[in-house]
Length: 503
Image (tube, rainbow, N blue to C red; front, side, top):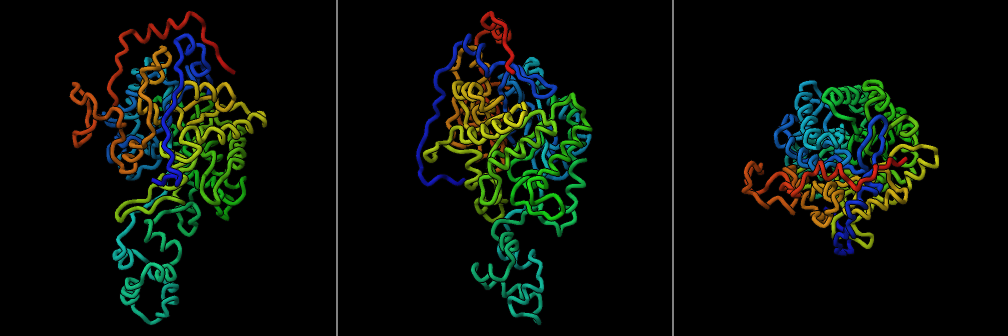
């Protein structure tokens, strides 16, 4: 993964932890409405891909254990990992592209609601992604995969050459010479692996995306509702299909690219089809980027414009991330696929403790706050979820107090300690396991192996019933916290005061 050249080492600073009384009175632990849905607190576990599904996208006991562990900490909401809306092979990622996935997803919903005592709402993030292939060996690409065209013959001055002779000649060229013969996309496919874009209008299935995607998303949302989820989060962020439509880099000439109005057209059509399918009493929001963080990509001004368009359309919440794009990804090794979190934009999405003068904590706060302010100035009250390096109570409370967020997301911090929320509410924040932001978890994600945290994955491995990784070296969920009291009764007693609802 890319690192800033300054190489400044930072340590997390969670600050002072509140007493139970202070926590009970805090904005962070007050209810909030997201459309038809009420969250008991303004705490949110964003979608994280744990690589625990079967190869054909089915919920496994390991998936259930992962979400059950987060639910025991009782955040206001958990968003299930990016779940594919197409019924196509995609590795050990959850899928929702066919009715046969509903029973497993229903069991997941029941598991979370039971483990949280009914206190945590569960949403599912639904995603579409385009084809990406591994970086090929040079000899195989030039000898087999590359389609020889008249352009190649012309540039080689080889009008009468056989295809075999042309391939042999290409194999003799160095990279500089080869880049002058191949098209930019062909050379990219050799160096990075082939990747589809929404602008590839010469491909019929790419040209047809506006006709196909609204129904695919709507069918997935209908399945989510049937499985018992409390809502869906449409994935419009990072390197994937819908984010590509929103990006300034989208220059489609068919009415779905170019201007802001055209780029937001399909995301709005998808939302409207989803809303018609699931009704007004089911929460529908989206995850999108405050900034693309790549040359020529969206700025905060673009994203504020999109936010207002989403709010006018009736989205129930907007969850903001940043970066994580393919355009600046690091070159993968031969046989591996490009990973959109390895370049500077990926760092903006998941900054590490080795950072620049800005540090790794809260890099998304000010861009997200600017978008929220623009929404409020335009008369919209749509709740905004802000995430990115938040690990202390004071940090989170300040975001709400200062009007920079309505809900605070804790991703890596909740992975480090799924009990963060209940510990802080009980006045026992000094027992929180604080994330160190080493990105150990991100490195596992990049390898497409089960994601764990180095702060707990080798502890108490001999506990009865602990599920382990296939190599037997890492436990798959954090050790259980034993508070020595009845959490239900303790939280119910609070400090004797009624909880307040914030507008």
